[in-house]
Image 1 (cartoon, rainbow, N blue to C red):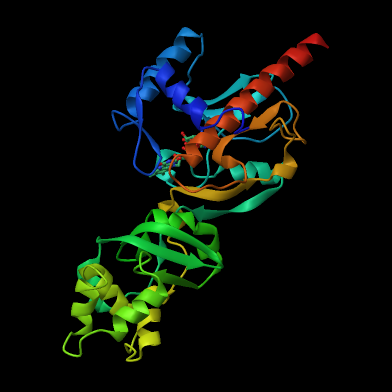
Image 2: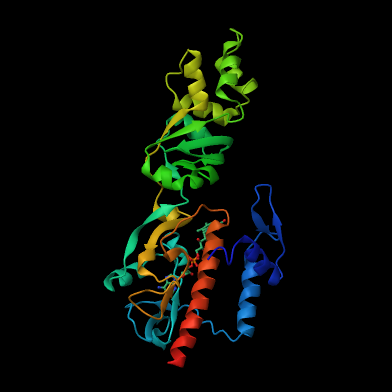
Length: 326
Ligand SMILES: Cc1cc2nc3c(=O)[nH]c(=O)nc-3n(C[C@H](O)[C@H](O)[C@H](O)COP(=O)(O)OP(=O)(O)OC[C@H]3O[C@@H](n4cnc5c(N)ncnc54)[C@H](O)[C@@H]3O)c2cc1C
């Protein structure tokens, strides 16, 4: 699906709607105007010219049945809509205030559609900070390396009241969910052997704080975290190298699901045909985050949602033409 509609096609799609994009220093692509609403407005306008009817504030309320009548809750009561095909893209189960509450899942369960449980993805991890970390809440840690279960991510994260959040954390989401301990390298640009030599040649009068600041170039937030994570601070060189390059970061699980940028879990691939149609409910297709896949934030989620939506849409049109010929 991504091979047919990947990053290049997403860029063309945005540009086709009059939205210029630029590539940032991380290689990620952003709309030049740095917001999504102009693209959405242009897209809705295009859909209207194509004869699409948008029925807003219509909530699909199940049951999930292999028929042509589908029930929706609207401000003026429940309505039934006849449709030969139905494509559902009701999202995952985070940020419920935007409507994606995962409530559809119970109708799928009742209809016997196999799903894997929703879990928070792209979410902060909880850490039990000591009171010494309070002044650093909201402060970023740049240029760090985080490791868990043999996987690593380089980048940055922010210290929050409840733990850590940000790109480097989200990128390791799956591993961090399953591991109570991550390891943190505060100075990935210096290898352990060089750091060892630097510590060995440290002047006796130079305090550890000064050494971390001047020689290792750790800012105040990083220094606070070095002392937070390794207590008592070792006096031997190997112990100090470990405190800087391999500090233990105990995790207490992900932050609540509703704070997650996305959720893993949902309709399992086994329940779907390669066309994204429910095997048990011919004519009903699923796309986007409600299907059981996950990706780090940074455009990967949106791209996969667009790719699966397009795939399901085309397959639904083909299905409709094929059934019309019968
Ligand atoms: C704060 C935040 C920041 C993000 N940043 C990024 C980013 O930088 N890059 C990236 O790639 N992704 C990002 N994402 C993730 C991305 O937005 C989602 O993965 C994507 O929007 C999912 O698309 P979707 O169409 O599958 O579901 P959604 O966008 O969740 O849409 C589902 C829609 O279905 C509606 N709905 C739910 N139930 C029903 C029902 N029963 N009947 C009718 N309608 C229903 C919901 O109201 C909603 O409008 C971010 C998400 C959040 C919350």
